[in-house]
Image 1 (cartoon, rainbow, N blue to C red):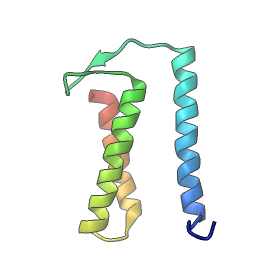
Image 2: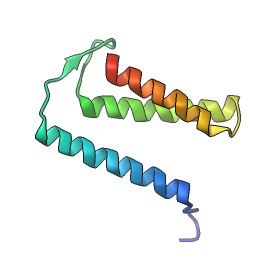
Image 3: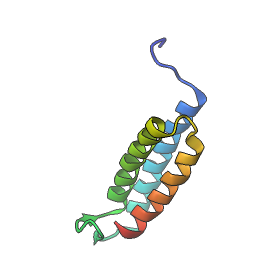
Image 4: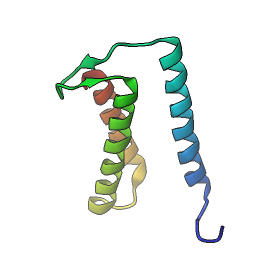
Length: 90
């Protein structure tokens, strides 16, 4: 596979996504929940909020690269704050 640059950060990224999906699947089985209505006025579950968080974090990182540059560790702090807000209020 010479066309894909598999680096440790890339592998860690995919491992974290896989771990999140496994964790949320186990949580959904062990602790079923009812959807709740948050600030967006739509019913969301844990999985929906995870998807919104991942999608928003991707856009935050793209905007960070375009506006600030490659100093991504600070973008992760912004993404963690965004994730906390999504899981609290959405």
